[in-house]
Amino acid sequence: MKVSIERATLLKAVSQAQSVVERRNTIPILANVLIEAEGDAVSFRATDLDIEVLDRAPAQVERAGSTTVSAVTLHEIVRKLPDGALVGLTADAASGRLTVAAGRSTFSLATLPKEDFPVMASSEYSSNFTAKAEVLRRLFDKTKFAISTEETRYYLNGVYMHVSDGEDGRVLRCVATDGHRLARIDAPLPGGAEGMPGVIVPRKTVGELRKLLDEDDMDIDVSVSETKVRFATPQITLTSKVIDGTFPDYSRVIPTNNTRRLEVDAGEFAKAVDRVATVSSERSRAVKLQLDEDRLILSVNAPDSGAAEEELAVAYADEPLEIGFNAKYLLEIASQVDRENAVFLFNSSGDPTLMREGGDMSAVYVVMPMRV
Image 1: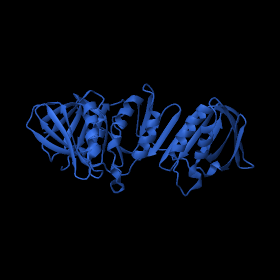
Image 2: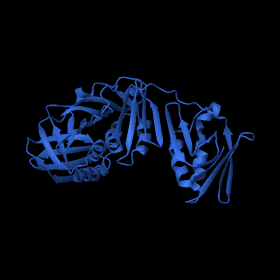
Image 3: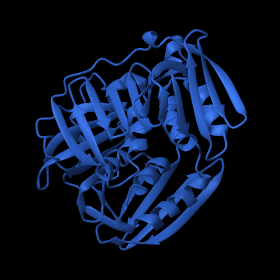
Image 4: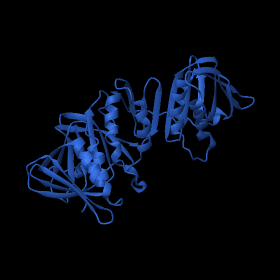
């Protein structure tokens, strides 16, 4: 194999590949990226046996061929090469080495045979549809903060993507929860997604997928089966196993009879919470909200470190209410609001609180209160 490729193009492809590779693994081949050169392109494939990423990049291929080399080492080398460099990759099967050459720099890297590299079994996908990168980015970005990190409740360690009934008909919905907070985001249902099985997309896959979704107008081809999900652009294909488990009935925890309505500037609210939480004890980080007519007082009282209080002008016309929350949860939820105002709907100090972005019903957040 002998190819020449621009440094910037190579760096983009290799960085996506090396981020999938597990740093600590007992199978040497899983630390490698499979490089295959053919025609006028070179492809880079990496896997941790649960996720596989395949990145295709244009290159001058003098001699077709393939090899595998350490993904992290190759990434570090390419990252440190000067901008604009033309990088030569030459694999010699006899010596089992890959030569990386750019300008006056030459590196010789150990390789492993490509026959040892595990390729994820192809799957029959029952649903195939196309969605804009901007739509998928909103669905996953606004839910991922609520993904659980508890390994025992493994079925909560991802985002549940499924088809459901929204306010105005069928929608593509993403939901995540850790039992303390919940995010539920809807998007118009793309054509072809109607019969899609509901799947739990793992946390790591959500992180890797984010790298595909930077260009708003790009079309992403999505394929879903009972066991796998695939997201593809013309250059990159990300295939992942889904979490084998049943996502709980989240609709039961979304309150429907919360009538006490608070409307507040989301940015001002987040800054105020952040300020008063500075003195809260790390363990609980509890912030108390005292609501009165058109007035909100945020306060923290931490016997060890001090106290803080801040008042905000808000729109509130119901009975006075005192309720406490984990400051981190409030900040994360408030930071999801794209519109100017956040609308909180309360019932009592012991019941879950609902939050929406202004009048937008396609994004709903729930947060459990805590005693303060």
